[in-house]
Image (tube, rainbow, N blue to C red; front, side):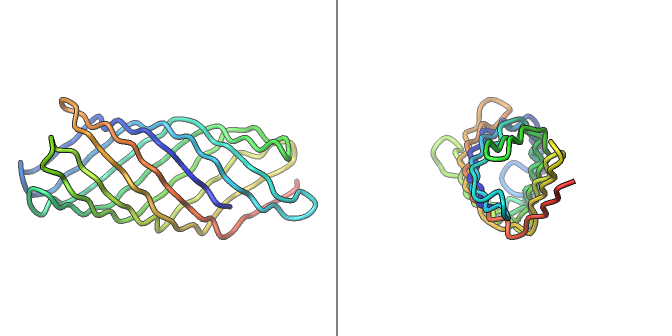
Length: 170
């Protein structure tokens, strides 16, 4: 499955050990829109699935100086999963985890980052005697964040390729 994800994130808590350098921990609430191209096994064929819903974001990072940070991003979402080709409409859980490299611009603290998605999984709840599970993913995420008072508003784009699909007809 190839997943293209657009998400909007509002970081609600940022804890930093220093103003310019040091550890940084960030949590946030996200909302994601996902469009996926799925290659189902016979007899179902190819389809397009959509996921939309809320999630959580956790980031631990280290700011090396005023501009550069590295860290680890974890996203956990619990959206609705819809695949019209097999009449699949169910709740799901999905997560992704990966190392992040970012840069804080001198322009009002706007920051950009990239994340390598090293681990990801999508697990829709079984529906109408079908059970999917998408595993062994890799990909990338690009983000743009704008500080807003004590929070951070971010827009992120993610591309993920799930190389294994566990498909059961129960």
